Length: 323
Image (cartoon, rainbow, N blue to C red; front, side, top):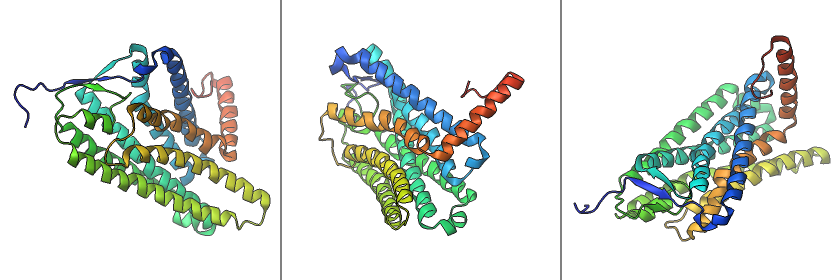
């Protein structure tokens, strides 16, 4: 129980990258450029998949929702990071901090579930092509996406609630660029053992299980690829799957190194670098790997651009994304 003489923290100071003062301007330019490319690339994916009827399949439905959540995921942390680089110490209220934490966990967990669904979709398409339309119909794909969203919403609730119930009585400086779980628990003046263990178990349940299921799907896919008689077909399919697996491994590897441990043993500076990968870099890689390397998607982009240019010429208006 808190002493009546102990004040309660009402806001936090995000220290960000204050140890790199001479690099603040360069870091701001780099992160702003990456954020712009991430948002723009994912918006293009959403627009093209929505407009092109040929892309109305479960695979591209998953991709559209992945792009949508990537925009939300990176927008949860990067704008505040950019503001922090300009002001060096960015204040955030306690409710806003908890809200940011909730959306961060929600979008992160949602990405795990969706990446698992996408790996399963590719497994069915490559290993069971004759049964694909039956096992992964558009209706089933929509239901799997809905399950991913609902599960993500629920996953974000428990950690945020437990953190909000902790006592924070000073200091109020978070040595990070957003309200993350480890630095918040380090600042608490109450016991965090139960909270830490619950978050640890939840991280194992979400990250490790989803990663394991994804790896199993790709392992079976690779096994099937090796049995393809055509060398060119084998290399093309393997190249695509290897790129997908590389992005998945980067995401899960960095997330697991941060959250699947009972306590934070890494230095705050290393934690920040690791966090940059899954909050800034990975949301940019997804549109590149999952769409720009896809022949069907690139052809759909060309058709959409030609069609919208024709509409612009005939009616004086067109798609915002291709003007």
